Length: 295
Image (cartoon, rainbow, N blue to C red):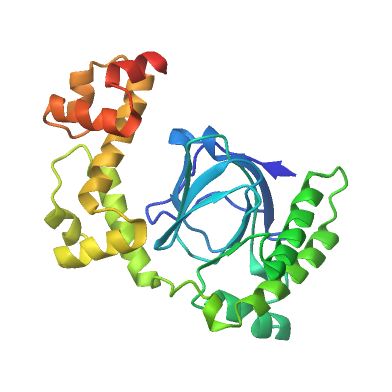
């Protein structure tokens, strides 16, 4: 059974709060279109489960850990456990995907888990991208699409799904067994936690005057360290992230309230109405009044 949402829900650490499956069957299939999410974006989040995505239609930017990739139809992605990620598109981009706990494949204390599953989870590989142009990757993509197609059928078979997942996992295990296939090291859990704490601080205080020093104080780091964490993980500066978040909040208020543009600018942390209008048009390609009329 497929599920779909129009926004990502997270806690203060940006961990996704939606439960994927249940204790008896920790597996969930989603058929989603990135374009239908708020701001055409599946925003920053992470989860302890692994995720496999197939791009069925369209093209989107995929931010995974410290990296960004623009990918189109026919591409597959494996996202390892606890890796922060974000997807955004400028067009309809259909991405059937599965999120599941590796415990579905074998008990944690079993030989299978210890020998084949745990090494993948603990490896430096935070994600893998699969293209049909590569013969080995083509086999992985074929198995992934088999799993996805089965979830759309009337008679979904859990045992067949797990059988295919085991085959897919075996292919991934073999694929990452060579150093050249590793995209790069995980950001440490500590670094990701620090990033999430700082982002949460911005989300809670965006309407106030915030400086880089204020953001750095939340995690007791130097300003240069904070700049590095933001640039290395989400490819922007803390202040740019703050401004962009304020603009998204302003867009929501323009669409859902009758408050004046001046009061919305003030309520979202912009002291200068001219600066607000200029940045808003840069972000949404419309003036605030044009955006309100369109929405």
